[in-house]
Image 1 (cartoon, helix red, strand yellow):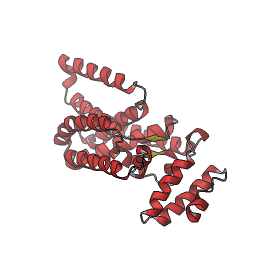
Image 2 (cartoon, one colour; image 1 turned 60 degrees about the vertical axis):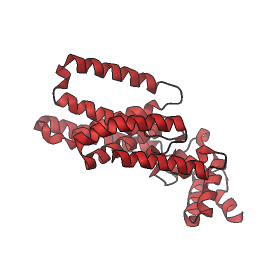
Image 3 (cartoon, rainbow, N blue to C red; image 1 turned 30 degrees about the vertical axis):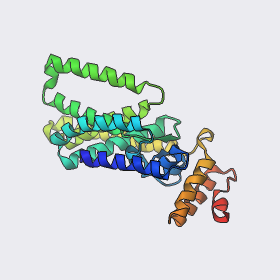
Length: 259
């Protein structure tokens, strides 16, 4: 699964370069990047597919290096299916955190998923008693400090990293709940239920597109690509939805049909 995800990320990155017509951001959106206007208009799958999209070669290189290191270890520990579920849930939680806690309109990358893998690995090590080892504790502190510093770099999404980390921890706890005492298990399930309710509530409250996150020009170019590549019905439906959401007479549906 680790190398399948790696191959998908590389293929998507190549596809972005192939279809790009001067704007890697628009090409990334076409390929499934997190893009708030389209998510609100109905393409909620972007909360998950964003993890496969990288528009910058260095971003791709760093994430794929991290995926090989973290993925191969956690996949051996958790197994193929659990690893896939863990990575998907972590990416999803990272995207939800971006949606609820930031004003970011577009985002890409597997970072949320990678932080989730790291969180799940450390949780399992702690469960196995590794925290009693001073070297492990010191290593954990160093890794946490380095990753916090990375998360604070301008342009890097702290929300995605934090959301992915929490998502990975909670998913690992649920997957290995049988290792826990009944009281611990109930607390974990209650915590997961609370996190789910908070996420749903936050998404509902933020289910809109603020003025500063509206890019009708980008919307139009991406919808034109949909229309010109066999997705006319979907393009028109998305244009109609965006026109209703914007409530400003952007007339995306009219422009698509009249061109």
